[in-house]
Length: 195
Image (cartoon, rainbow, N blue to C red; front, side):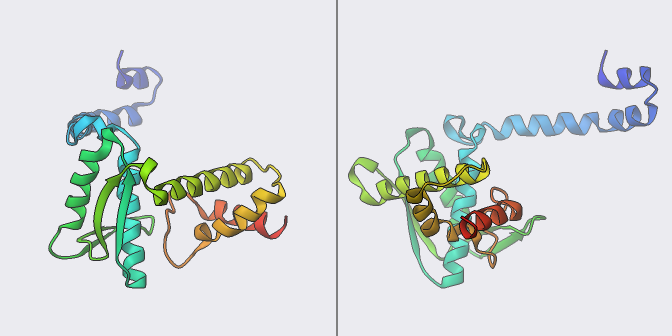
């Protein structure tokens, strides 16, 4: 029994009719999703790393435009994603005219990079900056997990949090709104102010 027949049997005719009319579109979308998974090498489109990377390079370009500064992004070597990240960087950065596509949540997707000039990979064992960014990411992760779970800070973690959390509280630019909501920003702010 398919879902439409089940809804009919439950006397949900209106919903059943709407679904029947949309099934072809749902199947088309599913087929499109399957094909998109094959659009980058090593099945990288099936990973959350790809949209995170795209959001990050867009954020760097946006910050660069705001402060009129140029950036070079160096990523830790990762065999599975290297080819895809280069391809995506080229796709987003090499558009001849700058475009900004607004999204419904207030963020936007940028094409045609002027500020994020280069992208490359380096081995973290040989690059102190990548090691430092790993430490910063670990501190942020630990601090946010502590706040999210309403746990107490020890003094050392609180001092680290005070130095890195202002990065998440900026309101002028939409900095990763999809992963740090206003509610979470308020919670972070309260944790810092009312310790």
